[in-house]
Image 1 (cartoon, rainbow, N blue to C red):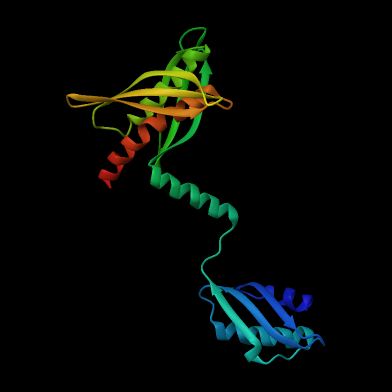
Image 2 (spheres, helix red, strand yellow):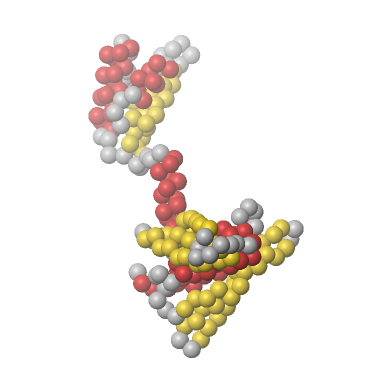
Length: 221
């Protein structure tokens, strides 16, 4: 039975196969799962021929059941599709954060944030002093600079970034001021601080602005 199943799964278009035998070893059923688009009758003929040629086993075609499935992709491809669909739903996603020392003078950093907006990657930079609070603020400002590459309605400005303790955990809270025409509003976002305060600041800004930017991006489609 195992040899027969291995043989059937080696046939073109066959994804899996199961052979059911009686207590005395007679083949009672053969179930085959194939990729969509494969002709069922051809699969049955291939199964009959393969079993007869390789194992000397003659099986009535009425005992062979063929089921078809949609396109099957590797898990890696499915993961990429899931990320892609999430990006399309959310509009703006965080790609990476980079910073370099020596930005103009000693003790300062150049912060750069890259975002994914649909199929396009945009980036923004900001200068910051090399200390914990300034690095968080610089990362937040770099996000806003990146968003301004695609945001054409009004202006965005970082109001502030700080770390707060709540519910036994530490969080980065970001405030972003959105000005459009004569009106303005303060958007707030949070991200739990697990390892990197600068990255948490980036995600807090995106948490604050995602709903706003998604609405605007949807209006452009």
